[in-house]
Length: 114
Image (cartoon, rainbow, N blue to C red; front, side, top):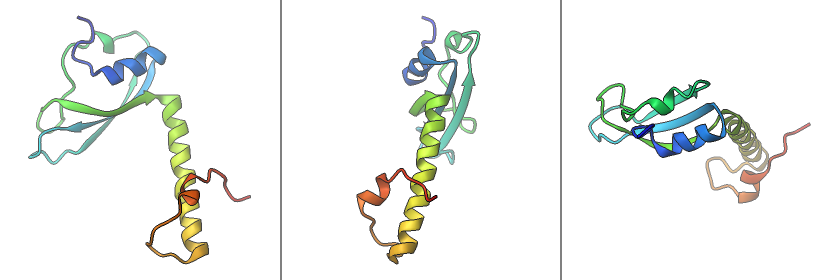
């Protein structure tokens, strides 16, 4: 079967777009590798021909998928994460809370200062 070794999450993202970003993790508890990020450009559907499971670059155990998304979705996600990080830093500075808990309103604020 085509793509039998490729994880379904990655294949599902490739159905939407030829450019995909995926984060995988090594299941081997004794391996020092925790996360592996791959960026795929599959203009010729070569990755769907890949029948072997993705392997850890260190221990060669099979990798499991944390998530997979199109490159465009990943860019949007990165921008949201960056905005949230800035806003949380601003909230901590402006409200002098140090490392204490933050309100959800500060976490979901998507605006940037002008």
